[in-house]
Length: 443
Image (tube, one colour):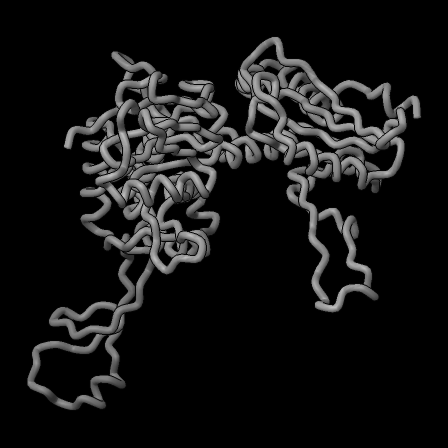
C-alpha cells in the first residue's frame, strides 16, 4: 500500500478539495483506521471527518506525525526551526548541544518529534562521552578465581563438593542500571518514531553501543519513574534525556473510555498546550522577582455545596488556573495559558466562561482574569472582554486576552548582554500585569 503524505499546521482545516490525497479517501475497507480516526476525534487530538467527497482534517493544538491508514499526517507547529528548539530547551531545561550538521541542513525540514529525537540523540552522545553511570551490584556466585570475600557460611553449609570453586560475595560496577535501561528503551522508542533515515541510523548505532552492556526493557512510565527515583547529584546529566523520553512516550498506549482494549497510536502526537504552559511557568518563575508564582493551585472555596442540600455528600468542584501570582500575601493576578492564537482565531466560549468564573471569584476592583496565548504576529495587541450585569451597564469584571509573542520571547531568552535580565523581567511583568484597566477602575 502506497503511503500518502499529508502535511498541515496546528489549527488548520484541510478539506478534500484542498488536497488530492484526501479527495475520495474513506475508511470503508479499513476499520482499524476508522477506529483510530474516531479516537483521535473524540479525544480532541485531531478531528477526522468522513465526507461524501473524501476526508476533512481539523488540526488542534497537537503536533507530530501519525499514520492513519494509507495516510501519513504530519502536523507542524507554526513556530519552527531554531526558535522552537531554543524555546523547547528553555522550557524543559535541556542543554544547548550541537544538533546540526554544518552543511546541507535546514532546521525547518524537521518535524516536531524529530527536534525532540535529535536532542535526545545529542544528550545520549554526551552521556557516552562522559561514560555511562555505573552502580555496584552485590553478587553471590561460585568462582574458580576468588574475588571479593569468600562466603564461609555457604561453604560450611554445602560441605566438600569436589568443585574447584569457592562461594564468593563481590560487588562489581555494572552499566545495567535503571537509568541506563530507561535510556536504552527510550532510544529504541525514538528509533521507531522517526522517519529520518540518517537519524534512524544514528539511533541504531547508539542502541548497539548502550545495548552491549545494558539489558533492554519495555518502555513505560513505571520504568521512567524507577529511573528518576534512583537519580542523585552524580546522575543529574541524565535528567534531560529522561525528560525527552517522557515527552516522546506521551501518547503511547491510550485507553479508550468505556472500552477494555487499547488504541496504540501509530506515531507521535504532542499537545503544545503542555509545552506552552511549561515555557511560561519557567519564565515567570525565573523573571518575576518579588512575587510568588503558583502553578495549578486550587481556588479554594470558590464553589461550595450547601451542607443542608448535599445528600450525596459530594465534594465541591475545584478551579485550578494555570498560574496564581501573589504578592504581600494577596492574589494579584490569575492567569491561564491557552495554546490558541486568539489574535487570528475567535475565543471559544468555554474558554470565556472558565476565565469569567476566575474573574468573578475575585474581589472588586480586581475582578480580572488573563488568558496568555501564543502568537508570531507583531501586530497582536491586548484585548479585553467586559463582564456586565445582565440588563445593566455595570461592569462586574473583565477577561483579558494577552498575546505572548514567541519570537520576541525566544529573542529575550537568547540575549546575554548586561541589560538582558532587566528586559526579561520587564517582559514577565508585562505578561502578568499588562495595561491597567480603566473599566474596572471607574466602578
